[in-house]
Image (cartoon, rainbow, N blue to C red):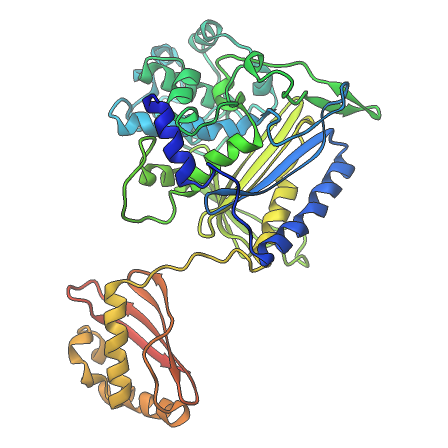
Amino acid sequence: MNGLKRLAAVIATSVGLAGPATAQTQAQQAAFAQIDPLFATYMSERHAPGLVYGVVVDGKLAYVRTLGVQDAATKAPVTADTVFRIASMSKNFTALAALKLRDAGQLRFDAPAETVIPELKTLVYPTTDSPKITVRDLLTHSAGFVTDDPWGDRQLPMSEADFTRFGAAGVPFSRAPGMAFEYSNFGYALAGRVVTNASGQNYADYIDHAFLKPLGMASTGYDLAKAPKGRLAIGYRWQDGQWVEEPALGPGAFGAMGGLMTTANDYARYMAWELAAWPPRDGPEDQILKRSSIREIVRGQNFASVQSRADRADPNGCDRARTYGLGTIAYADCVLGPHFTHSGGLPGYGSNVLMLPERGVGVFAFSNLTYAPVSLVVRDAAIALTKSGAFPVRATPPSAGLQAMATAIQRMYAAGDVLAAPGALAMNVLLDRDARRRNAEIAALKTVLGACRAADPITADNAMSGVLTYPCERGTLRVRVTLAPTTPASLQTVEFSS
């Protein structure tokens, strides 16, 4: 077994995809059943020929369903091995490739892009004080190029030579670089050229060898002509009451922004690997990319914004904080919490992925309908799964410091005196509220609750703060704590309540 195959086997085993999925809990099965009508309704309302959707949970493709046909002429049904174009979801792979090259010392994100793409030296910038475009600008849509949907989609067949000539001829700007987020497919095609030039091989070949093969994504690639025979989803548009086949596009230089094709089974491997970067932890890394580098994709790089909900009466439609990271969009809202997502749309295809890293859950869907807005139903499915309670936020293990302070607080409560563990108090605690007043609070709580046992559970926000819960004779004592930045551990806040 060669090195890549051996690594693929290791990754497949580590993310739980080497064999059949383990049995799901009844709660999870019930939650999965809730999302089926959402996708069935979407299929009906949008006149989509075919659709596949799935849920990755804790390193496994826990649920996958298919609807409709991959080919309207032959009526061949969609399967989990049907190959779909995923359009702009390809950008995440380009960004990951750039991160890998950066980690290897072959690329600098904040260097002028012209140092990697020489033809950019001839760019005429919009103002005399414009900064030169950096590699990071390309990866974060901050280069000042005009938003180019849907023009960019039609450029997928552009050859590398034509792309070089196109860039060298000069490209207009919509604004000076670094002034705003403006989604640019051309910018991500340039990011693909960055990967090509920095790696010394075409971006598609580099991504294949660096990511697709190690992850065991054997049916994933950029060239439609190489799609497994009989498994390609033909792309259609709904026009005049019927499906009309769209022309196949690519491969070419613009594939870095939207040319990837994959299957549900393959893509689940990638999702499981990416989600496995959370939470940060000790332990060995794989040979593909450091976990800390993967987590950079959701680090907001520019120009945060708020997407307001359209219907204030809709409890699922809360305002969403939004920023673009690296090939992915990072969100936070009142229903899903922190999550990241990206859509894809091409003539003949529409796709979306949404990942909930704090829960180890991701939802995706692919359709063979032009610009199919599957992001709407994927979000609805993620909300349904979150609200089911079957996929809770992963608990943060309490640190040794929190555990030590939990024992100290139990001594304080038992003695009715915060000075019973004086070494546990940071220097500010008694200055903020003196011992007499704190002891009076404890005495009042002991009258109500009686004696208390050891803390169980300790709910940690992070290594330095959390809520300690003490079972008592007549109720529960709750103590909110924050540790000071000291060694050994000490308390800078300690708030008792019942």
